[in-house]
Amino acid sequence: MTVLTALVQGTRLLEDAHVAVPRLTAEVLLSHALHRERVFLFAHPEHELREVEWLHYGRYLHDRMGGKPTQYITQKTEFYGREFRVTQDVLIPRPETEHVVETALRAAPAACTILDVGTGSGALAVTLRLETSAAVRASDISLAAARVASDNARRLGALVDVVVCDTMSAIADGSAELIVSNPPYVPLSQKEGLQKEVRDWEPHVALFAGDNGFEVYDRIVRAAPRVLRPGGWLVMELGFGTRDYVVRLLSGWKEVRIEPDLAGIPRVIAARMS
Image (cartoon, rainbow, N blue to C red; front, side):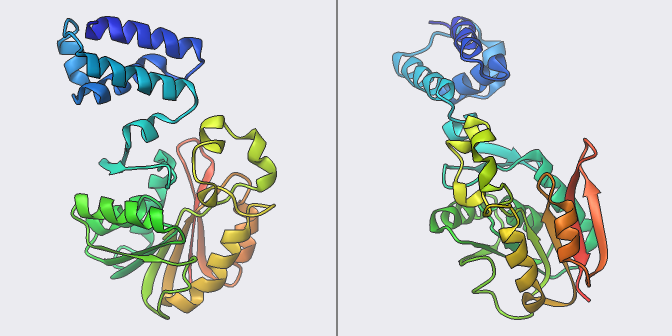
């Protein structure tokens, strides 16, 4: 079995299973099985797979056809130009969440202390630590997620203090000049309408926020004034249809800003504490 034959067969299997971008997915899975970069596949189409490599590739294809996200198979994804480790204990960071980083850097470029609430893989916390000179702390209710975040921070050389707690319950008063978060915001009523890759594989604690999707926004906005220093900033990702509700939550805050993503959808909200 050569690399070229493996790619052709894998692409066909993924197409038949209605997996998105089947050729690219086959390339990523085969690269993972070979422990090689994708460029190797193009440079060496005649390379003969060893039996163990073919077995791994077949298992990865089977998992992907069953709905398991590619990132959970390879246990890695890219965020803000860096490779993060992901497991089924954490949400897969989306490119749209990079807008949280960009908004935070614009809103509070001189922040010396940053808190990432619900850190998951640590994508926001690690990125902000590496993009700034701030002291960064991250919290998550899941011990397993906190371990993934700590591992990513260590591998990428970011000094991030990870705390296991519910939102900000274990965070000291007045300890942050900037709070960032990509909170759960999917209503439980929309569970069945999600893609199976999301609904069946990603952690529900990182996806769902009560019947209306606003539960975690409520708790973050309620707790933020205790943790923020005077004049501090709160920056959060917005879910579809949450903008108006979160804007009302932040009435009384100053300089409320809505930042759209590249598709023009309201993606991030930033506000400064009075």
